[in-house]
Image: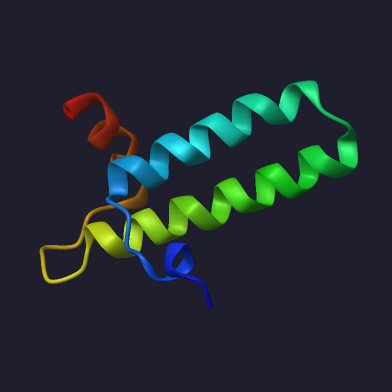
Length: 70
């Protein structure tokens, strides 16, 4: 496994990447779009897990507010 895969990103970074993938999914081939949307969902779940590590749980719907707060 390479070093990039083992680094932990902040929830805001993960959500920003997920949003970017969702935006790009509208302009690529449908097969690629499906992969982008799936990865965006994975990143959103990872952001939720990172946001809740060692703290009070955050509802998944509140995660997008993290981007605006940063």
